[in-house]
Image 1 (tube, rainbow over the protein chains, first blue to last red):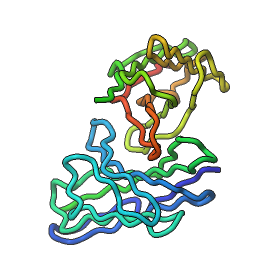
Image 2 (image 1 turned 60 degrees about the vertical axis):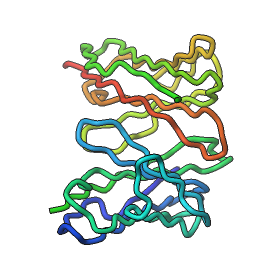
Image 3 (image 1 turned 60 degrees about the horizontal axis):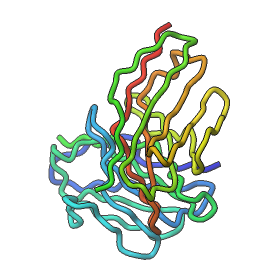
Length: 117
Length: 112
């Protein structure tokens, strides 16, 4: 149980384009989902907390107009990197929390590796 | 500011030995504690959660929690080369959004 998927697993795009990443909880409903970014050999950095049906809460320093988050259902959250630039190249990982059933455990998706040329 | 501290390592142990990973946290009201394993180039994978003082065992893994001293540890018995990874300690200090504070991780290398 507690499986989280992400799509795509890898994306290469040109500078200036927008990229959408999907995060799905496959066997549970996720009241809260989280989006992280990880640069090579660095620690996880929380970008935002996403709650179903409400606006995401962004961490300090994360541009909400650049990283658009939509949590339209209890099993799906999307992250759109708008007008991507090479410095946005990173490993983007989502996690999902089952709510009361799983207390505060976060289950991670496999990640999406974004390369912006 | 809530902080979670881990020795970055690398921690190197021979195959079959016990690996001991430690973590301290700053927020005294922290309630939930997690250990994740992250292989290079992969996303974190949950190993164990612990909520009460004492030990919690799951196979070769034992998590230990001491809230008075504000530390949590992970012991890996009979370490295998496949255990070589970065181990992340994560802490939830409460609140309704279930946000976790992660340490920077300890790199463990198990030598055959």
